[in-house]
Image (cartoon, rainbow, N blue to C red; front, side):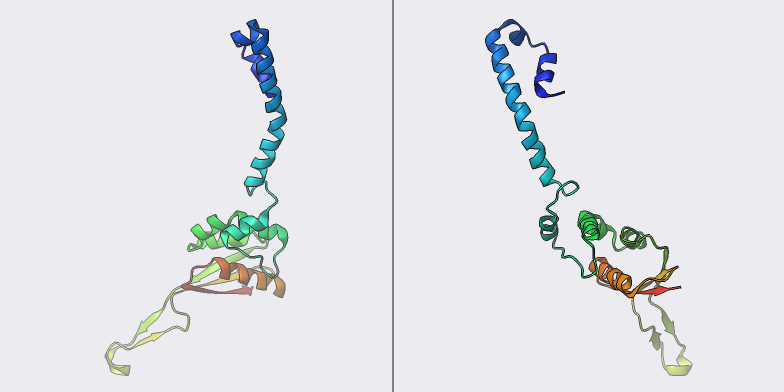
Length: 173
């Protein structure tokens, strides 16, 4: 239904009883019918979900296309940038980031800071030995083999979104 049809369906008394108002309403409706294409065109360009100006959206969000990233993956990453950044500090958030760019099965194994306290007898009072990887560390283990290019892309992707206090590695089973 266009605007003229909609206007006619309202049965406005002035339009029905007066030829002058009928002409005015008809003229307004025809102008709206012509303008609707341009309104949709402007709205279409303003929303990333339907727009083609991905570089403008990426620039606005401070994102650059990664070296092994396809245009479609770059579009998806730009589209989901806010959601990824909001949830990236959780295991589920990291899984979501990876699942949005690969269909290969993987498992994330979380590692935490391990401190081993020795008694007084061996190395002195409450000496501590720590692991090499301090803080939060996770391993992304793919069930099937991934190429070096895919691995490099996933590392770039995770480095882009992971929290600063974390470290990770990507392996094959």
